Image (cartoon, rainbow, N blue to C red; front, side, top):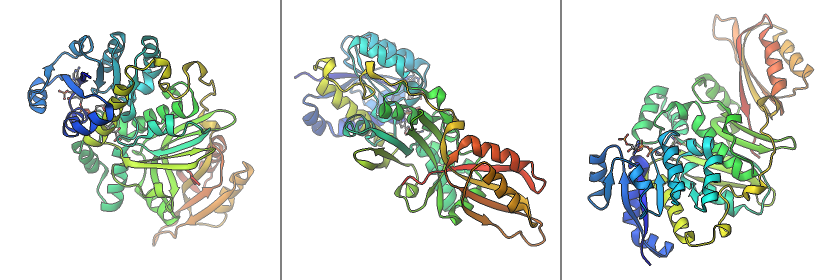
Length: 436
Ligand code: NDP
Ligand code: HSE
């Protein structure tokens, strides 16, 4: 059988990894795919560097339009990133009857509904294993491996950069800016690293997973997004004293009223496996009604780990390219005419446990005032930590862990607590998940 021809858009971190792994493991991959997969054309703005990387083994152009309109190309791999030019190129590739592989979670979380509709109309595949959790085959697991299940919740460390930052700060005492720079040098960070540190990248990935898990359209605009930039070293320390680690988690949950979809720093009991995932590693916990909890762990970013997922998609498409489109696994696991209209819940309605830290006057009655406010709002306390004031100080920190309650109750309680004369400044609120 003649080789399937691939056009690669963008030969940066992931693109070069894809080129190299495909070449290195060509024989194995061909044995699996049933025919050889050949990168016939590469487009990159830096043609010189692209020629060096590809060693004269394929055509190199600087205009990606030449790839997506080339009738000889069967599959286009989009590894440029962003949702400007990348979206135009993906839509053009689909319009020209090409199958598409992309690692671009930003593009799919924001324009996925439109892209999948166009692809379905054209009868082409759009594959995106690399878009979530780098090298971990989590899309395959959610879309196919867990297909018997009614998925109840997903919680994942799905941004390597922020997990790397939190781990290095904790273990080596390095400062935020130094570790972020390291993450950029190691190729983990997005072109705009605020997407990583402000939780946007994790929210893109959580949006994609929620869509596949619950059969809902992509709704990134409804996700709650909170990063790690406001996290205080003292909270990481206090959490540890209470037996918890803080991780940036992407969480989605099915409830009777709708879907929770949120990204934020989260306290997790330190005895959970996922609490011990360090560095740029990712881990995703998926809870299905039949299987129970399953955990997927591996490298969530970087050149070759991500290439591993891109090439898995290439092999899938190669095997299925001649199959009737109706016999393929639906893009988002559920048939496109069977998507659910379950709403994504506003944050006020989500239910979880909380960590509250407040700076208070060290005098009798303060704790009683705080606990009364919580009790009035039916918030029950799970644990408490009161620090001794430093020598000569008259103020101290109180940390309270609550049992589960609605976010709107906690917000109301904090508003009242902050008005107490004996409480100084803002109350810090972090969410806590038992993940049991
Ligand atoms: P890079 O910035 O390393 O690579 C992007 C490449 O695209 C660069 O070589 C860039 O050229 C080239 N490029 C930019 N604009 C164009 C254009 N108009 N036409 C052709 N080429 C262009 O990004 P990554 O490889 O890190 O990321 C690629 C995608 O993979 C992104 O969507 C990212 O979110 C995703 N991803 C990345 C992971 C990672 O670990 N890095 C992991 C999982 C997903 P130049 O440098 O000259 O601008
Ligand atoms: N910037 C992303 C991360 C790349 O750090 O996880 C992988 O998607």
